[in-house]
Amino acid sequence: MSAVETFNALPAERLAERLLACLAAPAWGAGIAAGRPFADRAAIVAAADAAARALTWAEILQSLSAHPRIGERAAGDSPAAAWSRTEQSAAARTADDRTRQALAEANRAYEEKFGHVFLIFASGRSQAEILAAARARLDNDEAAERAIVAEELRKIAGRRLERVLDAL
Image 1 (cartoon, rainbow, N blue to C red):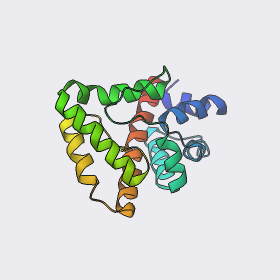
Image 2 (image 1 turned 180 degrees about the vertical axis):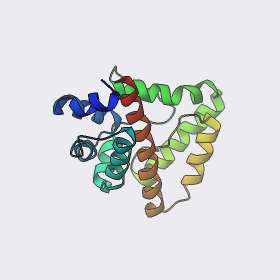
Image 3 (image 1 turned 135 degrees about the vertical axis):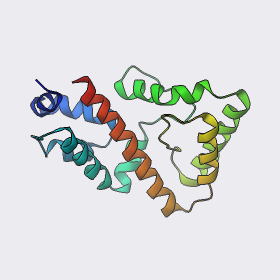
């Protein structure tokens, strides 16, 4: 059975669990599940992208609660925690103590200004690149930052969904 066939055949509860591990927004998972059966992998990815773009700000904020601060190790043994550790691992290996401290300070300043964790698609980025992005985004207004957060979350969810499909 192909990954797409397996995805289409998953019981609703198991599919919901896997999708929530990708993005902690039930509406996102429900939007994808409602499109089953899918003809191919590209159709699943397109449905996920459309569902992510349809999220409200309240749903985005809900999903942010499942993300640790950049530079902090995600706790637990859930798939989402493991993915977070993997996504941040390369960046963590490239950071020195000064950069780690500066990133912690940028996280605090960001949270004070925007009221939620700094979110960035960390895969393939160094801590220095992440720090530069965090500092630059502190200059954004609320509307601009919301758009960026929504896009970063969409990219993270898409990458995680790819991992789910790869594992089927």
